[in-house]
Image (cartoon, rainbow, N blue to C red; front, top):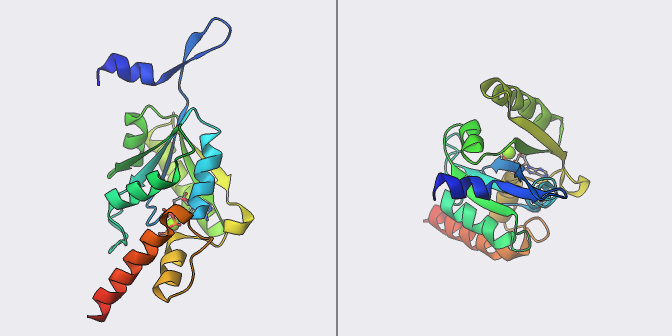
Amino acid sequence: MSSDSRSENRTRRAGAGGKKCPLRIGVYPGSFDPLTNGHLDIIRRASKLFDKLIVGVLVNDSKKNPLFTIEERAALIRKCIGGMPNVEVGTFSGLLVDFVKQHGAVAIVKGLRAVSDYEYELQMAALNKHIDGDIDTIFLMADVQNSFLSSSVVKELAWHGGSITGLVPKEIEQDIVDNIKKRRAEADN
Ligand SMILES: Nc1ncnc2c1ncn2[C@@H]1O[C@H](COP(=O)(O)OP(=O)(O)OP(=O)(O)O)[C@@H](O)[C@H]1O
Ligand SMILES: [Mg+2]
């Protein structure tokens, strides 16, 4: 893509004179192993705050033995964002701030479930601000009904044969159940 067309992709026409304005782009990062209804709620709400929202799937070295590969996680997210034309999915390793800058984004979006999220996220937001003072972090409070929900909880529940209906988007529920069954069979052998 030429730099001209790239900058065209990052502008929108606004105001009476149709003057070009920069697109407001946000990045919602996470490991999404797998996407839950809590994540999808944040994606939906953040997509209304930005012209374009990029869901950034992180290659997370600290979380060993992921259930899905990074490409599979991105594909599962794409299956669930059909009705949101301004949402894209990308993958990254390394510094979040570099990914944000590469895409010309102005803000990082995070979801907050509990005080425990807040303490960690406060530290990360301050660190990212230190690395690049132009990039802000925006926090969206978790919907009350999703406040207990995490990818880990979903995996744990499915591993022990519990139902994950209502906790993950229906488009990907069977993919998750099938993969957990496969992992269980491997573990039993
Ligand atoms: N239920 C939820 N409601 C709102 N935000 C959420 C929810 N679950 C996760 N988030 C937010 O989504 C982002 C990505 O989180 P992450 O990929 O760590 O998901 P997770 O569900 O916490 O998974 P894990 O159990 O592997 O840590 C973070 O900003 C996190 O706070
Ligand atoms: Mg987490």
